[in-house]
Image 1: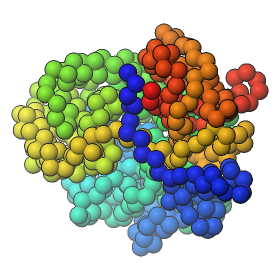
Image 2: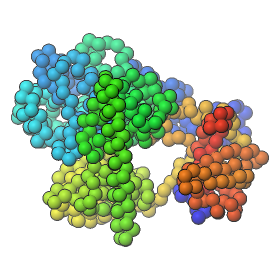
Image 3: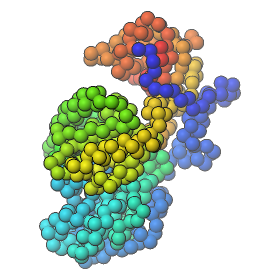
Image 4: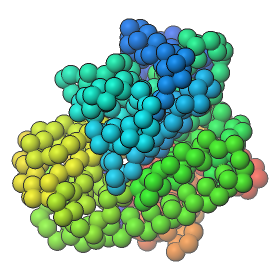
Length: 557
């Protein structure tokens, strides 16, 4: 004990000679560390534009694609044609489906939402699901994909053969060419739900509902955060104002989800979205069918909302138990094999619905790109999660000769494979990893904004930091460090004594600190009585009187 968990990377040095307000100096430093400089950029960051002032062209979608797509939608509405909104079974895809379906349903009752089953249709639109939709809806003439479709070449061709036009609305990694769809609404600058919201706003504008409507903005915020999209630029506006809508929402489904999750709507932020709401929305798609999550978001019936929220909550508890079992089994297997620059595990006992979560947990534990495969008799499904600086979907595509399909982002991807090819695929990935994954990639890093003295922190500092919210990918919560602190008081707290509560002193100033999960440091700190600490700064109101508290990220003794 005593070693840091991370390699500390201190980004900047605070100007202690500055004559102006210390919090103003610190704010400018934090903005600069995030690439925000100059009065125009700073103003846009601290006061992001209202979403009503953002257009889909702002994220690179061409007017030609918009014109063709909305023109075809208008034609379908006028002719009373059947339209299907084809989504995905994760939180972003579910929110995107709800947003676009609700938008179109205002104009036509012939619009149906479709969420594929992870276990039947699999990820993304495919020829079989197109044919199934057509057989169940003979008058179907238009499919609009959301959060999928940008690599669905075969599905688009199958649709055309059946006389169905396809409009693709997607943000995932594309190949060199696009499918031959009627319209392509494509941008990598936001999530599927963010793109669906901007597209819906354009539909409303072109079809006559010219307003500053925020319908669905709260769902776009959920999808962006859940999909781990950088919360910068357009996404910062959508999430900031979307969180305001989440706190005020009248959606019975969201209100019921808040209640069953035991969260207060006034406290909702990116943490509550990413770690409380999104897992529950995702759970049904992992273990059964995500249609119940879509129903929850769209229902206007409060009793129905409570029933559905209970189903989502129970399913999430079951999901947590299954993930824990998979991770325990995977850890036993991995600890028994030689280390390499990737972790690749395949087993018939791994539940297909949770292998992505298991891969994420394994990255947290071992910090190597991790692949987990649910083995089937003939075909198998896999999920992969990466570490900073290693593009996991590019790795997978370099070994694509062994795969049936693949897709995803730099940090997360999924694939399907013939079971007979798993071993050769694993060997190929190891070869690729040896080429592109360096030892520096495998070193955990903690980016620290700057070193502070406790005298640099006052009661206004948490309020200053709050101006940078919402935090997330691309705009991390500020982290600081202070070296050689004295330990005035130290005790173990929480169930199982897993956490540390401390009073730390630096240059005659004492500040409270809490270290969740740092209980193992207790003995070493007791012996040494001094430490260096990396932390975030928050306002603690537990005692009734707000006061500054440090939330520990790392300790060096």
